[in-house]
Amino acid sequence: MEPLGGHKGTNPLRNTIVRILVVGVVVALLRFMHVISTTASFQDGAGFSCDSSDFCFLSASRKLNLDQPSHSSATAEQFAVDAAVWKLWTSKEWRRRIHAYSAFFQNLTREGLLSAASKTLVVAAGDREEAAAQQVLALKEIGVADSIGVGKKPSRPLVLSGDPFRRLPFEEGTFDLVFAGQGGIDSRPKDAAVFAREIGRTLRPGGIAVIHALAIKDTYSRNSLLGLFDCCRALRSSQSSSFTEFILKKYILLDGHTGAGNGGPSDVNSNNNSSICSVPPWKKEFVQKAEPLIMEEPLKPWLTLKRNIKNIRYLSSMVDIAYKRRYIYVDVGARSYGSSIGGWFRKQYPMKNRTFEVFAIEADHAFHEEYGKKKGVQLLPYAAWLRNETLLFEVDGGGGANGEKGRGMGRIQPVGELTGKEGEPKEVMKVQGFDFAEWLMRTVSEGDFVVMKMDVEGAEFDLIPRLIETGAICLVDEIFLECHYNRWQRSSPERTKKYQKTYSESYCFLTA
Image (spheres, rainbow, N blue to C red):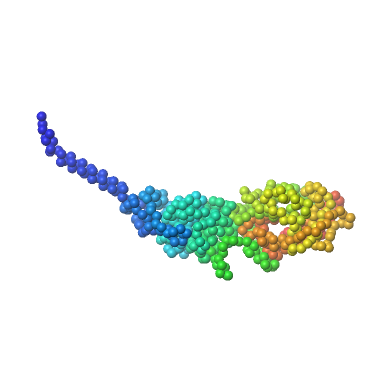
């Protein structure tokens, strides 16, 4: 039997091989655990950098020196980022996106809109807090260290919690630049006005807002969006294949106050009775697209209306009405609820899934009680007029043309100026008239979408010139106007004597 020591000569070789293998495994493990390969240059707020294609040492317990910016309402603190988060931030997909965002922000820098000293806010689009975090990292990479994101869900330390459709957690005038990309303003269309207000509020005077909007389809929606940002003036806009980019600058008014995105009657000079507003070319463009007026007087106007009603081109069907603060329908001479509000507007007008505030203006007390039972309708039980004064309201005998039996059509007259044929049955009462143009300027703003119907039995020849004279007409986007003239009567071969205007005068009135 060979002694055990007979294998002594092979032991050193075997041990050497084992040791080499162990050392190799250890080296491989160390390398795997302690190095990260990156695909692009990266630099965080602490100054950590890694050149493209290099292997960079990173401890698993590394703490990023990302101080929460001083403009946050919370206490400044440092955040620990574990290996999993760091691995995500340096992943190939994140690096690709960060690189793209960096190029975008560098373009803003070249234009002089962004600098290393800029306090910058990134507003997350909907639930895309991850994209906001990537955008913040991109800003930090190009040297804009004082950058922070905000979204519904926090992604610390890059994105804080905050809802731009309610109120952002920052003081007024905090930021030099606010970026809201990826159609953030479109994610909640009904609250787009609040979104615009919050961006305007948190911008400093002279600050820059960069907005990417998805729903810009025509000049109407473009100007509607700019109307929401009444704190700012547009420096430029540009169209890409997927969005429209707006560069806005917050201005300072002459009195030293900044625009705050409030809008309102002050947008039209309600204190100046000669503030005739101008109609911009882009609005005239849509007027040209409306159905044509009938130049020759129809012998049977109600039949003509019935034939042509299918040709009506509603403005909301021609343009995108997304970027509006409020949606308002004003019915002047409303009569009963079913006459035009329920019977026409809510059934036929294309509202585009918007909820309209409805104002019914009706002086005839016979219809007032019904409106107390109608939700979403605010009744103004007065007569729309040129000024606040008492008027006479006369109601003809017989039913109205719309089938409301037992109640004739009413019209207003100043006290002492009754009209109508001798012996014609009528009811006369006193009603309160109010300055309709002044009310309209107090109630709606240029940022609202306003539809008006006016059927006031001849008083339109007084009211429309007043709306033009005060500039209040420019607050109305679309108007449906019934002009009353001495048309042929249904029951006799004579013209009505209720109205003095002729058809040609009415036509000229509409085209003036």
